[in-house]
Amino acid sequence: MTKYIDLNSDLGEGYGPWQMGDDERILGLVSSANVACGGHASDPDTMHATLGEAASNGVCVGAHPGYADPLGFGRRVIPMAAAQITHMVAAQIGALSGVAQLTSARVAYVKPHGALANLAARDVEVSNAILDGVGALPVLAISGTVLEQQAKARDHQVYSEIFADRAYQANGELVPRSEEGAVIHDPVFAADRLIAFLESGEMPVLGGGSIALEAHSICVHGDTPAAVEMASQIRKRLTAQGVEIRSFIQG
Image (cartoon, rainbow, N blue to C red; front, side):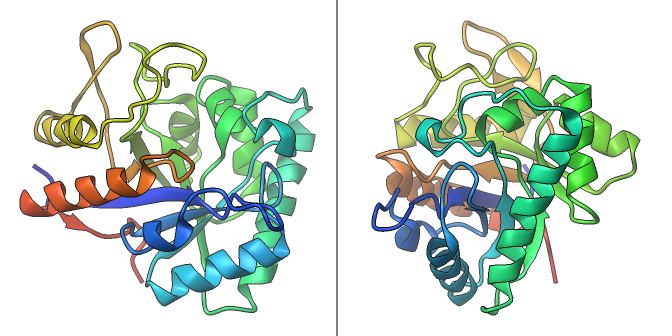
């Protein structure tokens, strides 16, 4: 079993007075936070509060750009040319980086959100458009997908992510949220599955079988009802197995 791994969550996804998830508690459990940049969610005040709280907890910060579709929470594909995706990603990273200058946090990597990430998982053009927009920042990509492959082909620093609370298809992509069993709600089951994966390198596939994946980081979505319990259970169980929880970005 691995000696250490990152535990990340998608945070800062509220808007104005509307809060999404319990970011404060989650930030006491994870080692990396993917902070919404004003596309699918967030606003300057929410970004500032999330960045400050992350810095106070010693949590590494990444930008979490997605389609500018707050009503759909960035989980619907918006038809865009490759150049438009590049510009959108760069603009959202720039927004978060600008707000970060008002805190002690530093934007250290980029993780695409929602429908943008899922499309990049299988689309070469979209993957390259994202990579064109991130500059020199490392990318956190869904393990075994086209975005990960394209980053490696371009010698772009990339880290691989698996999901604690999502089911997998045989091709390594996530099961669409519209399908039954796509989201895992049981923290104990999620932790058991992760421990088995870290021992074998094989991720179970919905419907039977498994797929070999690489992992530098584990994601627990911050917007699910069981997010805090999920993150707490996973951290406790992995630590008991001798696995240190630490960010994949060091220094």
